[in-house]
View (cartoon, helix red, strand yellow):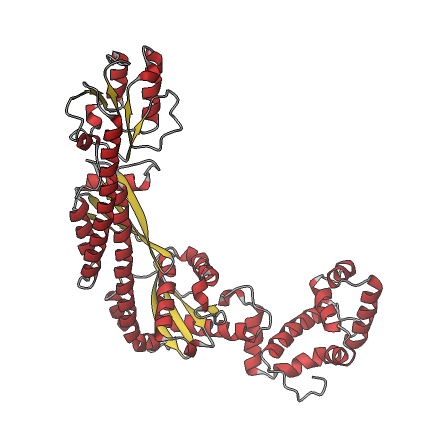
Amino acid sequence: MKSYITVEDILGRKHFENIKVVAGKEGLGRQVKWVHVVEVINIRNLLNGNELILSTGVAWRDNKEKFISVIQQLIDSHAVGICIELGIYTSSIPPEIIDIANKYQFPIILFLKEVPFVEITQDIHGLLINRQYQMITNLENYSQALNKRLLSIDHYIEILKFIRSYLQVQVIILFNNNETQFIPEVPEHKRIKQLEKMKFQSEDSTYIAKIPIHLLGESYAELAIISEERELTEFDHLILDRTATALAQLFLRNLYVEEKQRMEATEWINDWLDGEQNEEAINEYLALTLTRKPKGAVVCICKMDTIDEYTTSDVTYFKMFVRAIFDQQGFTLFIAEKRNTIVFILLNERSITTWKPRVQEGIQRLIDSDIRRGKGKVQPLFGIGKFVEELIDVHKSYQTALETIRIQHRLSIPVQSHFYDDLHIFRLISLLHRHIDLQEVVLEYLEPVIAYDKKYNGKLMETLKTYLSCNGSKQETAKRLFVVRQTLYHRIQKLEKLLGPDFMSHEKRLAIEFMILSYDFLVSSKQLKEKKEVL
């Protein structure tokens, strides 16, 4: 369908019977958006582009330089042509102007007889307005037809063919994984050329239009149309926008179906996480979904204490969102649900040396995104286990991810990292806690300070932590605690009395620092029982 009006179309209207195109014939296919009568010489800032100009030439009468200036301004303002009435003010067109117009394919049309400009503008403006109404009707019809197709098709190719048949342009879709589809198909050299056009499209290009396709707030693909025979119009852009929306709906529907199918594979994945799958079974299972062997894997656990309050649709949507994020970071995901956690097995497809920053970026994007909160629930905990190069060792990564969640859950102050590799001292504390009565050891060192603070609210524990973190600098400690030095000296004397004058000696200081971290770990996890009266 033709949703626009060209200069050539207008030349077939009433009052254009006696005309002559003296220059710029190659520009007769330009789209006309409006018609103006111009009788001034300074018009550069008066036009918006795509106007057809009507003039008697009175403004540049017998002045070739002014005439050239007007034509150049019209060209620079992207007017589509000028119609000049021969007669009292203009009798001929200078050769220099003919040359300029031909160079820029700018049509110059001469009225050989007197014509009524008012009737011409009324006629063409009415035509443009009617065409605009028709465009809206056609757009609505296209949308309805497209929506009907969505109910019956399974592959996006059908939609691409539909927009191709409607607009008669080259259609290209470029996915984030660099997969491309051309409708109609073109030779390889032309594919490369058109992809370059997409990549380096200038802002004022009128022969190419593209639009991103977003899924779950993330860019999924880019849809483009390219025309080599005509300029793309506003209608083309609107059709492109409606088509991109339809494609997003189809892709989202397909992803949802795929996610539901993946849920059925949860039992097998749970066995993999528990270390009950052998290497042969793992390779056979992955061969059905992967085209190449992964370069190691890591397990990420998302713990949501209120997961039971989420609907099945909420959880499915969240998993789709996580998959979309980590797919861009170079990971293939396998997902399983275990009690109040969602477990993600991230199969690495890129360099092993970059797996950690890519996972970190993905986690940060999840934290920064509103979707993480679902219905306003508390932000979940994320725990990333050790990276394993052999897929049969995924259960080891899973166990360390669980340990990361356990440690994070017990700490009153959030750790600075979601990675098991970064927990360092807390891993040792957790290990000791499982094998010895850690609270007895902690109280052996810190009981006097804890008891004093409880009895006198002396803030000795806070002072001790700050003093140690400042490496024994009294000036820095007083500054951080917002106290005068005399107050700090009094507190340090009290600490020496309770812990011993050697509490800042190397070995004892290390032990005390370790016990302070252990104390925080135990208190926040409510493991320090009240069998001690001082607590």
